[in-house]
Image (cartoon, rainbow, N blue to C red; front, side, top):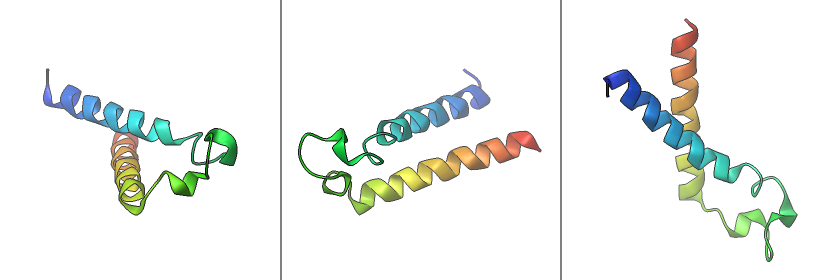
Length: 64
């Protein structure tokens, strides 16, 4: 596996993590009990933001 393939693989894993947050964080009825705020904490949010920033940086680099 080349370095580029490894980097892409890492980004795909980060995208998979972000994908898990898509519906639950937007729809209050996506959980049996409680609201999305009851299930996500500051650490999780910061991790998601970091992952999104990594993906955006990769895409911006590729578009140049």
